[in-house]
Amino acid sequence: MTRAKTTEQTAEHSSATPLGWVSFVGSGPGDPELLTVRAIDLLKQADVVVTEAPEHASMVRGVLGIPEPVEPAEGEETPEPVGPEFIDGGFGVDGQPLANAARAKAVVKQAKLGKRVVRLMTGDPFLYASGPEEAQSCAKAGIGFEIVPGVSSVSAVPAYAGIPLTTKDHQEVAVVTCNEKIDWSQYADNRTLVLLSGVGMIGDIAKELVAAGRSAKTPVAITRVGTTTEQSTVESTLENIAVDARAARMAPPAIVVIGKVVSLRETLSWFETKPLFGWRVLVPRTKEQAPALSLKLKGFGAVPEEVPTISVEPPRNPQQMDKAVRGLVEGRYNWIAFTSINAVRAVREKFDEYGLDCRAFSGLKIAAVGEKTGQALEAWGLRPDLVPNTDNQSAAGLLEVWPEYDADLDPINRVFLPRADIATENLIAGLVDLGWECDDVTAYRTVRAAPPPAPTRDAIKTGKFDAVVFTSSSTVRNLVGIAGKPHTSTVIAAIGPATAKTAEEHGLRVDVMSPEPSIEALTEALAAFGAARRASLVEQGLPVTKPSDRRPASRRRSRTS
Image (tube, rainbow, N blue to C red; front, side):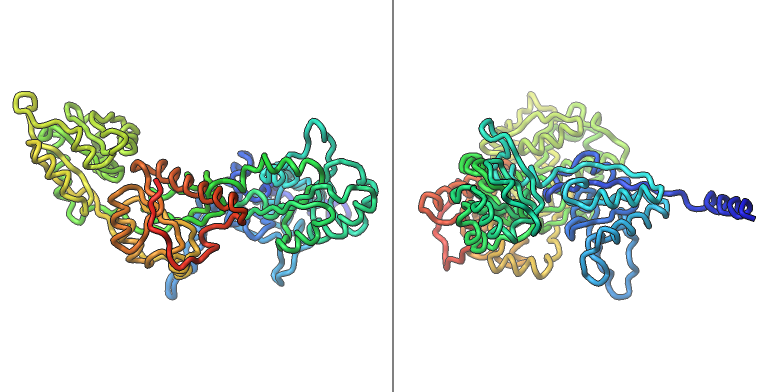
């Protein structure tokens, strides 16, 4: 009887769903860019992600390029979910933090269904986390698992605060997870101390360390929300840290560093001193162009928030574009002039539609309004024959270098201009003056985007943005049209004189103007403005604030280039 039962159980087990696999992945201390290559690869493959922190789901969606879920309107069907399933491993349905055993149970349950599970853990899975206990549960259940180390807050947060944990004079470090049973007398020497979960007890800890023999003047630093643009650090000493931490409202998550190495922060602080550190910057751009600008702003410490103001759409009547492309292939034109990346994209899409490639440009001269448009052409396999000088990359700059029509040298006097439906007439008028005939063809339309959500509109009007960067006159007009005028405390940055003029016509005072019409120059000019502002506050002995921290009634009329 016993043997028969065993055989029956074996058959039942063999027909069950095969066990899955669990990857315990360290998410790092907060900055998504500190995720390891292996971590991102596993997240792409995951069926289920068991999170630990409230921000983990958004972090994963951002890294994988997955849109945030949207509640369907009444009467609409719920859209199919995209990406892995997310399970909250931090809190239960009652809103209370889950115990390690409950987290392990959730992980094992998903793995037993045959799913690829990523258990995403703050910092490193085997350092100050429940990783070991959960991994033991997997082993007990016969589930395979792997450990993917993450960048630990123990080293990363002090590094972002500009505090090295060791130097040639201070080579010992002790990492202490704080609780009420710590014998602080064993840390009375001059070792560097890194305290986890110590911010709430820092007053008592400091007293015990001083009582054990540490100097009351020993430097202390507390850094909260480290590696993110919300990071803040308080520097003090053992005798004053309790008062200073309370005044600065220091709260978890935070890392405490105690020791002489803290004094090096004065010269090594690099993250919190970025010129736009923590600035909330509005990026009113087309959906396609915003990421490049946001990436540059992040490099200077800003928190960009993209608000689409323009939607690029095909022309209502494609026949004009079809006719022009056929004329290009038949040799109707001597020149084609691209005045934007969108124009390059529109012509390329039309070529794809007809099954053409860049060989159709043989014998045709190509002009580009600037380097970025030229780069878009080169990515297509085309090298422009004519690009304006870097100090004036615009339609006016293109006219400055455009040759006059010469009947003896130029077999055809016609120019193909694929442009937006709202393009100005200056370029055409200038080319006509030089003896050329122009086919001004609508290659794409720029349509005003839908208004942003109400909280964003409110932030724009009430000065919760520190700066806004305008990259064209249309972004000015459309932002004001869909969201209203930015508050007077918001720093206004414009990509060039024409954009600045449009901003001023809408009642905005331009603080920063790019020395040349490029995203790089614009962001660098804004960063230079932020750095000068910071230096001025430091020189005056004032706290370093952001523009949104102050609400002046009016701003001076000035333009910084």
